[in-house]
Each structure stands twice: as structure tokens, then as C-alpha cells.
Image 1 (cartoon, rainbow, N blue to C red):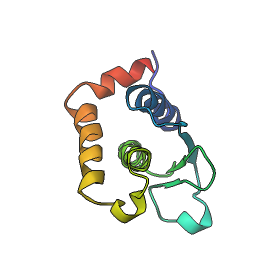
Image 2: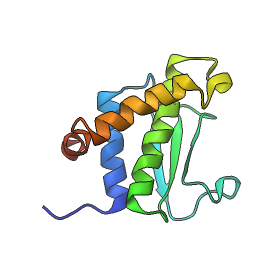
Image 3: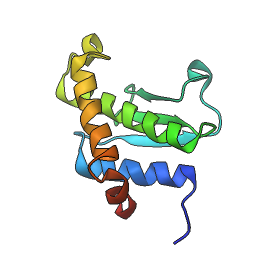
Length: 118
């Protein structure tokens, strides 16, 4: 099977995340060559303005940067889903516990392989 492009791989990983770690109401993802002006310079960002939350991924970054940025932003979606006062704990211990679970699953517990089937 040919290797997926970075955009397609991020979409595949997003499907895996949604299946393994569901967020009420879901999430969306958009991989773009150029980030919106207010997010220029960012690797990724999540916006909650209109449900479901939208994760923007900077497609001009390296594949690994795009993947880890997706994991980071998805952790924000999970935090938002679990804690309605999430803004006060945006990069708190609670956020990093969630991110740590995602990263460990990705790196140490077979997430990279599992996500290939998503």
C-alpha cells in the first residue's frame, strides 16, 4: 500500500482519535497550506466558535509536527468536553494529563498502527 500524504494521514489519525476518544458532538479538521491570518505562524489551533469544534492544521509543517499538533489540539477538544470551565485550565495539569494519554497511546501503545485502519 502506498504511503499516504501528510494531509490524508492527519485525516486518518483524526478518524482514529474520534473513534478511540470520542468528543460529544464530534470535531472537524481542516489541513491547510496557509493558516488564517489570525493564526499565522501556528502549527495548529482549535476553534470552538461554531460546533463542532474545528481543528486547523498547518499543512506547511513537517508530517511529525502536523501529527503532534493534531494530538495537542484534540486534547483541547477532550478538555473542553470534560470541563465546561476549560478556558481557566487551558494548559493546566488537567490538559497535560489528557495530552499525555493521547501521546502515550500514540507512541508506546500502538496508536500509530491502530490508526492505519481508521
